[in-house]
Length: 328
Image 1 (tube, rainbow, N blue to C red):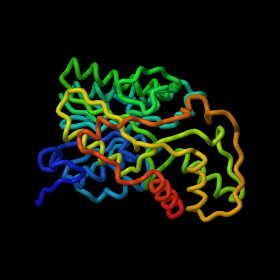
Image 2: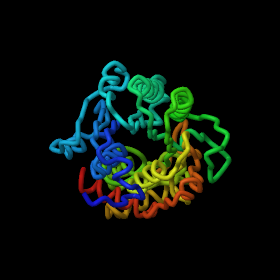
Image 3: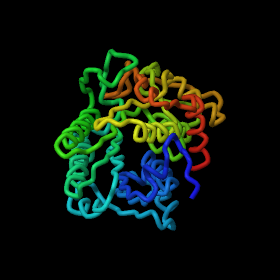
Image 4: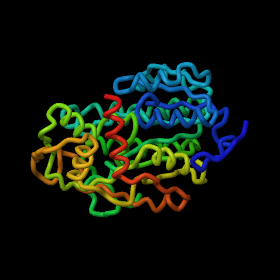
């Protein structure tokens, strides 16, 4: 096999023929990570409850002998322990990703994010697995005044989702201290791109498909958000895994500028080739309880390892809208 650097990673040393477990591997981010791991030569086992997983993502790899899919809720620790046996590395991507949902269902983030993460760590401990990638979120920063926000910012939570992700980070660090795990934790801004399943771009898209002449925007439309294209996200994850030699690794991943929600709407409207769309605003500085008026992360730490995003926020939004148009 002709080994080469892909996303800065030397495939032979890190992932070729390694046994990898990916939780949430039928989802948006998890599915793209699985694509790359298979390209690297890994033996990949995906576990996913399929509550929000995409069947097409699973079907893309059904014929690949290096791919195995197990339908599994991570709250089932006994089955998870069995599936994790013999694995070299865990990519823990599965989570409840609906930040707004925690207002009405206060258990979902606790169960699907915090307890599920504990179960993954316990399965690692019992199977002597030493390496984990965990996808956290910019939501852990709450309504911080530190803009752009570095990783060592004091954290005050304004959402149960953010609190559950922070709890997951803490559990990973504690297990790592006790049992010698090597962890890679990534705090993401909103990730966009092909197979994108939820968030402001698809919200606007769905509203405009229903009524192409008007668009409701939550808040005042002036919220400033950073987005990151999925290929750049995957690139950042593998860059950290390859280049950082610390036991505990925490990285922000995002672009180094923001875009107003109002401008996101304009880009979606433009890509859908709509005319005379009238915007309506629900009012207020945020769209919902737990929303952040400004999301801009400092990415100096991951950039110091050689990572740089290659797709602008604007182009990422356009690519996402185009994908939605072609894959309704």
